[in-house]
Length: 578
Ligand code: NOJ
Ligand code: CA
Image 1: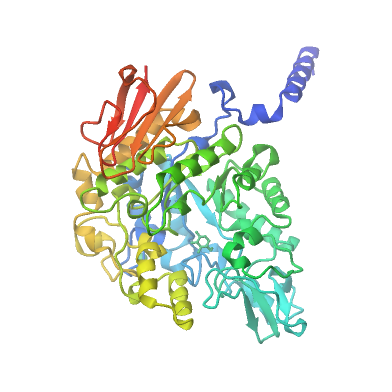
Image 2: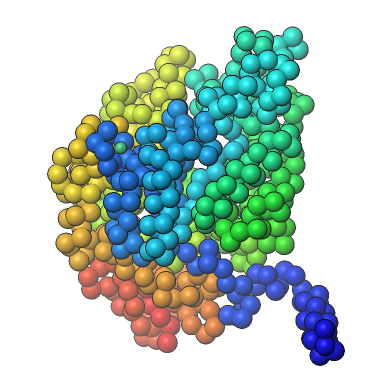
């Protein structure tokens, strides 16, 4: 090595050492220190494969169906597709019960189809993020079959067992079980196994290093195929105190406090990062992110070398059947933002396959306001700091399913809770009313492609009924209408892509106490945008303190957007400050 090169290396090393770590990694103050990452700048489009497009007429969406719609997906302008689980599964929970992590679910196709899908996305410059479901597996996974076969089987410790001669295990709440009991007795070995979700979703034992190695090897298998990221399903629950202490009576009302972020969770994530994530250019998302913004931050603070971004529920949970308060909404999004303003990264979303439809829940799905409110919500999601996630069908303004008979529902959670309510003699009409608004099936009806039979989703009988409004709400009709929700979605996606300030810029809430409108600025390197959103079905004035004479209107969801501080019903406008 020449002396010059040696000196240069010394200087670079010393400089590297004296740069404060946190600052160099995340501080968003100026462009040079933005620490730009593709996954911060990306817009994620979530595809629920079962309901997206059926290619072979069996009524179930499949990979070939997605492939046939790649040009549509590309036309949205999004950067990343997140696919819900497509691994082999008996489908107790629509793929969230994996029986073979290295194979494709028969209903969905073959590994060749998967390879073709990945290539088709990459050819179009779109990345692919896969669901990683490893808090639990299916009870039909070979590991579990072995595990339950005898107490001395080498796979016994892959799961959590409690031998019955010790008496009944301390109560654990199950989210999906008919009796909400997370311990299931298995007479074969006279023991109980733990399942936080359904009986067919036994929890894996992350304390066992063999389980961790198996999962990391499996992740490498997919990363080596070239996928671009993992969404860690329910991983916040993966670590448990395996002495299973008793919890106080009633703990189930806030079970997440007892289940999330326990034991050595961070240690497992650091190991995952070291063994897998750090070796590939992949993004990683923590679905469920503990109980506080601080918990979430600890999962994604770059200095901790765990995951990239948190997908936290406090925001999406605000909307209830009776509506929600915009003041609460603003408070939650602003508080979460403040914890992540300097370091760490958030996902921004208001809907997914576990929630009712975006426009029915957070907007207004009446014929008069559906389009305006869907566009307003798109404007919100595309202008916040964090990576936006958009759930398939919401770009059309698809609405809740409108099911009123229990026979119409398919979701294990909805159906098991129905049985549970029946068993305790509950008022079932009340329950039906509740699921009409809340059931996850609301978001799982087939994608509405066109006005032909079954919305063009399938030539067969769909696994779940198509929403009756498909003749008026569908992609084909919206393609033709320049003012459709779909075409506005494309516009606002492009607007975000063209304005780096919307990704990294500082967020500031204005007119905080206004119960009708949400206004904020985003600012980066001297560029300042003002976003104003009316969350009501009436005219509403904003009081931002900004001289509107010094602003320029850039984009809005009405054909002729307001150029002042009074917004029409569900109006959204973005201004630039001159
Ligand atoms: C979260 C998933 O999004 C949901 O659909 C699933 O039922 C549970 N985790 C269990 O895997
Ligand atoms: Ca099919």
